[in-house]
Length: 272
Image (cartoon, rainbow, N blue to C red; front, side, top):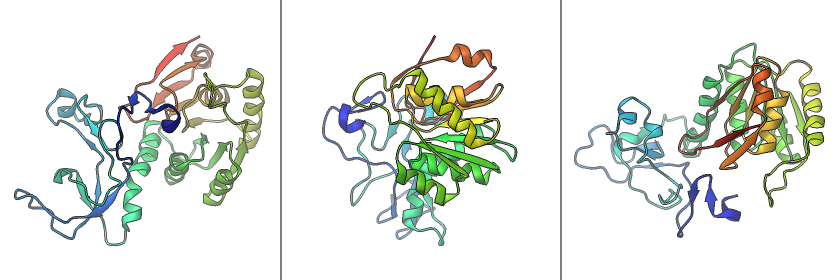
């Protein structure tokens, strides 16, 4: 999406930049005021640099800071470089048994953990995850750690679904691909209804919770329709900057909806 449209959600690429934001590394230099870190320490980085002065930061919601500089989000360069300069208070020492590669995965893993916390996943939560990419798979691992007894993964790519199965998904469901080259990234109502039936059959009972780790009209509509009455839907991925969703019918079934997406991205919802 970023390559096709030169934007990530509401962030628009206006000039060449370094990509990436998941990273870990070895400290080569420290500032004169830094006392808790030494050269040679292996660290993971908090990838968003907030102002620490606005009311949102002071209230503990620094992820909502309007002056946030986040690696890889225009115009802030990412860390796919040999060296980066980073605030010491946003560097965290890695345990000896955690590799740098594993340390770099702390950021996407935190997305899955946050999603599970937002959705109150527990031992009685049977859930589906739409999207078997890195975020979807890590959300699955987090949900399993939170005690979820059954997880169904939905995707359009066979190899991703196979990988999800190997990582512990109870069931997998392949669905029709989105038409990514034309708006509104949606399929017919008949397609969605047929997929919902297959998802429910794979679950073998009510879907308590749906995680949409993709973030298109179709995927969120599928999540809303697949979740049983009084269930929960959590939006994690944000593939579109605006979405048109059937929230009225979802509200009639007393579904609760929340977002655990990176709050730097703003999604507009049009109810019909």
